[in-house]
Image (cartoon, rainbow, N blue to C red):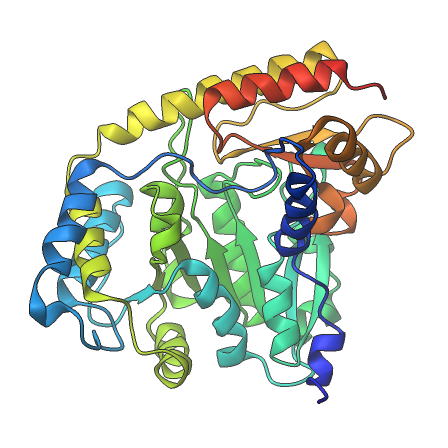
Length: 386
């Protein structure tokens, strides 16, 4: 049996590979604290869970749910964008629910890239942007996100000939993994660049509601005319602690969503109705619980920053996302340091090199574990000899 050649060019997914190593250590009796993956450890609000249960008890909620999402869900998402960002969306053409935003990110490449076509991808970045292009037979050009530019790209530094050949441009702010932030002014520059080079601008915005100290991220679609050239992905995973439920959204350019929906109608059959109805409850219900949730994340962020500083590791204080992007101590690669820490102390950080060449020299640390475990991880870090 011979798998497709495309898989030989596809590297193993970091967290699948790391999960296997952690399983081996746990089988040996080692207590591993995972600060490498951004999965919320707290449940959704009780009302969301109750909405799921009520719907699941209905006998008519267990068949195929349709390809395009419940009309009530599309309307609720459109209302959220109007309320939160002042962005008007047509729920019947500019909103598409997803089985988690990750599947939409990957499937978009199938909708827009033919073999040999080019996508512009940040470095470092969430791996799915690049892997989706590879699965579609496309290629990528990586552009750097550097600390001296606050992890914002210099789009004009992308060679003109490369930009002309490309079909997609990926951005994500608040940024995973760096924690970098973008202003509406930067988004306006990105829209202008996209328009100039006839690209589809794809913005991944799953951390818009995971924020600290009063910060409120904008949506790229707030830029005038952005819907003409752009789409924006978002997720219930991070906003509402529904990561395992697998539900997200993409909004914006009508033609782009139509193309993505054409792919999806051939590879999936929609989202379980009860999950969609719970998502409606999430986005239309009381939002104050998110403030309490973010306060817990912020406390953990501060514990990690204090722990890192105590051992001389430098890191910026993020105002959004679930992550601290910390510098690796001198004398180690990111993989060497994180592997040594995992083996000797049972603490798992994600090596920055997993997110691209420009991630080398960094490691990503998540706040998505219970606070006592975060404290224990920092105590272990202090005992770590490096």
